[in-house]
Picture 1 (spheres, rainbow, N blue to C red):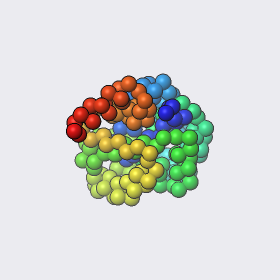
Picture 2: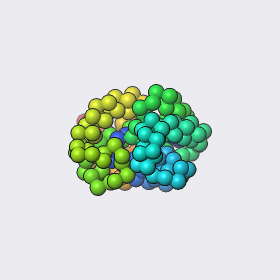
Picture 3: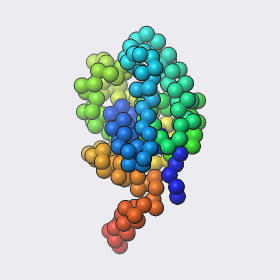
Picture 4: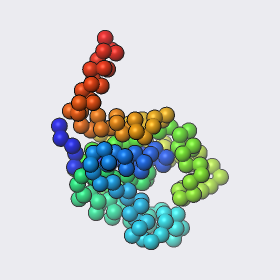
Length: 188
């Protein structure tokens, strides 16, 4: 099995898409792209400002255009925004020549990882945990449906998640073969 042309990371806020994406790209020798950061760079404004001025729909239109543009990139790891799965037209763009990885994390971990982050417009209210729960209920089935690999990130270091992902993406690595032998011994 050879490496995929692209690895696309999907999942909720606080799942570690940017952190894990950077490390995974380095491990694979790929370029790292973060769709939200590229949108901010092109607009000259941060995402909360875009939400304030254009609303969520305006941001989602920009996001779809960005995903369309980035779908032609090869040897990349792409971290997407948590809501990228909400538009059905994005699904084909996310899957195009890609292995889609759902970084799944619990609500508790999301709350912990996002509680001080002011760059998440959907969480700027009196009940961010409630928002995260509602978003998870709607988005989790979409992430799951799109995913080629589901990787749980709770209580795992980014380094461990990356190592496990490399083994899942390219199972012919010597490390993976050792892990398979080790797991085989544990199940005897």
